[in-house]
Each structure stands twice: as structure tokens, then as C-alpha cells.
Length: 279
Ligand code: KMH
Ligand code: ZN
Image 1 (spheres, rainbow, N blue to C red):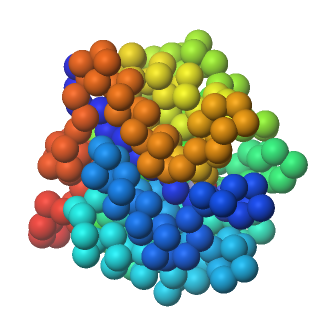
Image 2 (tube, rainbow, N blue to C red):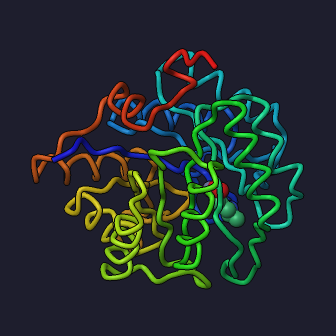
């Protein structure tokens, strides 16, 4: 089977320090977790940052610090969120692109996001997509529901998003598609039917994270794990980012699914920032 690409979503914007003492908050803590997870097999670090109170921040100096600390130690792909936190402005969210991360998220539509509304207007999606294209930043296209699949196809056909597309199915958020095998399989098959060249990963929240990750490993997809999406290892037992990453690697090993090395990820996803891409 194709080598498994593991993304670790280290911090996110929703989990609070009062929920778990293992949530990395400072740039040093976030980078330390990322580096440990790289050594365990993760190849992409999905990065949100927090201010000194532990609240979500859009401060690009914090993003910059995390990127520097990671890049100094390991060749892990640094993926900045453009989703930020609910309530952040479009400028705050888009600002991170100027730091030229290897990757950044591109949320393919608006949804009710738990008790909040996560707004991604067509104009904002297009602005981000074109900016990433211009800056050779590889988008991670976040798909929360079926309608977003058609939006993705639209933007690929319009040339706003280059193939191979890196798609992350985010399932099980109240307001988005449920975390169920048939939903995942149908989403994958829909894109295949549209003749889009893509690779895919799955992220799911809470107790659904592990089953959906296992489903992806078996189906030949890829995995996003990490405390952004789930803080528990087992019911009542808090996890660390490293514990979650190590468990995915063990499961992959059990079914002889090799773990991707960084060059495989760079070449397979055409990460231009690493291919010394000359425009
Ligand atoms: N924190 C969520 C509102 C992304 O990273 O682009 C959005 C999110 C998705 O985390
Ligand atoms: Zn995120």
C-alpha cells in the first residue's frame, strides 16, 4: 500500500488549557510537540497559535517563531491555518501566508461549526486560493460537507487549485457531514468520479478520531491526528500529541502500511516550497 502520510494538528483554536494540561500553547511547546511527532512518523504539522493567556491568536510573530523552531530541527512540512478561530477577520486569517509556510488550509465553504458559524465566502476562498498559488503554498483543502466537493471541483477546473489536490475530509463536526464510513467512502468516490487527481486525509473529532483514522489507513487514505481534534487517548485518559501519533504508527505497522518519509510527501504532493521551485 502507498506510504501513510500523517498530519498532526497540535493545538487548534477550540481546546482550552483547562481541558487538558497537554495542549501545547507557546511557540516552544508547539514546536517541541511537532518535532517529537516528526520523529514518531508525522510529516505535516498543522499549526494554530495561542497568546500568553492560551487564547487563539493571529499574531504572525508567533506563527513565525513556531515555523523557525520546527525548521531548525526537522524537515517537517509546516501547515498554517487560515481558518484561525471563529470571529477572526479575513485579514487576520489570511495574514499567515506572508510567512511562506509550505502549506496552508483552504476551507472549501461555510458551515455551522458546533454552536458557531464558520464563514468562508466564495470571495475569501478565491482570494486565499490565488494567494497560495502565487506564493507556491500548497493548500490543504478542508471538506466538511458534500456541497464543498462540488466547490472544490469548480475551483480545480477554474485553475484556482492545482492538482494533485491535497484534500482533508473533516467529519463529525456538528453542522458538517457525520463521521461515518459510508460518508467518507462516498466523498472519496465522488472526487474519483470527477477525474480530479487528489490525495486525501481524514480528520475527525473526539471519539470519532481513531475509528475514522483507522478507516483511512485501511482504505489507502491518510490521517490527521492531534489534540486540535481530540484530547483523549481512551475514555477518561488524556492524550498527548505524541501518544496519538505513535498509536497511528503502530496501527499502520500492524497492517504493513509503511510510514511516508518526507521526500515521498514532498514529491507526491508537489510541495513547491521544497522542490526549489523556480517560477
Ligand atoms: N478552528 C476552526 C474554526 C483550519 O485550521 O483551517 C477552523 C480550523 C480549520 O481549525
Ligand atoms: Zn485547524
